[in-house]
Amino acid sequence: MTGEADLLAALDAVRDPELDEPVTELGFVSSCTLSNTGDAEVRLRLPTFFCAPNFAFLMVADAYDAVSKVPGVRQVEVVLEDHFAADVINAGSRPGPGSSSPSWPCQRELDELRADFVRKAVLAGTDRVCRPLLAAGRTLEDLAGLTLGEVPPSADLSRLRERRAELDLPSDDGAPLLVDAVTGAALGVESLPLHLQRTRLTRVNTEANGSMCRGMLGHRYVDAGRGQLEEVR
Image 1 (cartoon, rainbow, N blue to C red):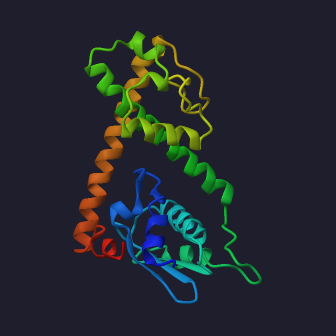
Image 2 (cartoon, helix red, strand yellow):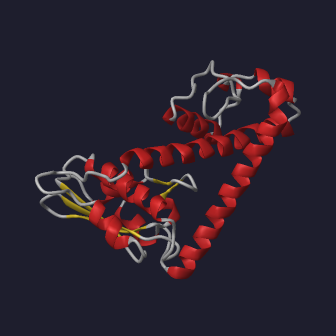
Image 3 (cartoon, rainbow, N blue to C red):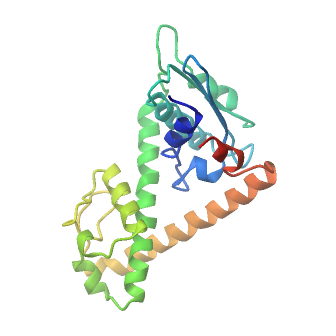
């Protein structure tokens, strides 16, 4: 029988678009409940009252879509708490008259924004995969000739493959390790110094933002983290 644990599992797939981390791991899910009749409610909270509304809207929309796919769920409501744009975002997430699901405003813009952040995740993930290779003595020439299938398996490599696949970039074993995050074209060795510098800066910025968000959320909500939500699993 479907329960709150299934909702939480579905929400594991919803990521903060900037940090590329699940909202469940970040502590952004304050509660999720499911009635006996299949009505689901998810409540989200963010580190500050003024977090970017476009990021918040993406997370609300993705949470709605993820929970709607859980077997046994009849109706979904996602509520953003304690945010300056909560009223507008929450209103936009409710189905309109005669509809069973929301008609998201500016869907094209949201999709483009999501893709921009997945591209940043590809850059950060590339750095996480390449740094150990360089530390082990691989040269830029080596990296330019490597395929994904030739890289030692790791969680970072799997994550990079997943993000590339989301953008329809080559992600099979024969795909080049280093590709342009927009076109998917293989990168030559001459372009690697600048590209790897960019990937490193993207990773450092993403990780720093993640640490800052956790700190602010923990200061704002003393129970931030999976905490009591984990008990329903």
